[in-house]
Image (tube, rainbow, N blue to C red; front, side):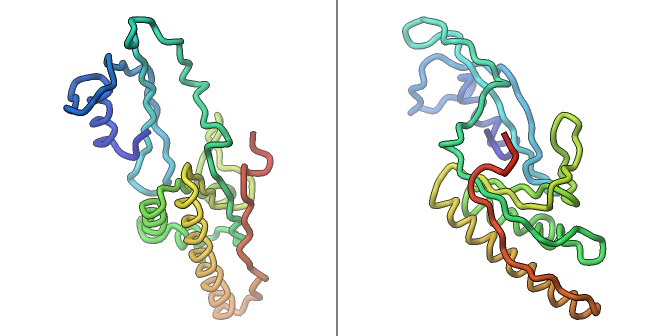
Length: 198
């Protein structure tokens, strides 16, 4: 899994034996079996690339067990995740989506770079299309955070809480300046798998 074309190609070259390093002791080369791209950071130029590589033989000459790419999953025990519920509906006037992303996705990029976490805005108004039908979910707007390392996950949670607290304060000021009644906003987070997800 790579977050860009250049890093994926460098790893692919090593795995397939086209550009091995002197300290590589991986044994026989791998072959690329399948390749998929995922838009994990909507509205940014980043595309996550997932490649499945298999060996035709291992060190003792035996064929490894077949791998079905569609069934490759990260076990729930290995994946730390949570969802922050935004509490503000997306509209053109306040544009909460843009305030969460930051200019050209700056906020998301900074958090991802500092923590190694994956962030995805989904739900009503997110613009994120999902599922076989490629539709925006009717779920409330939420920012999903997933990580594979505890310290990075905790830091990502802290940074997202700071970001949403700031966005909530901006919305209160926006409501005051436009003569609207500001809702009672607070940072609400669900730790663990998203409710209703498989």
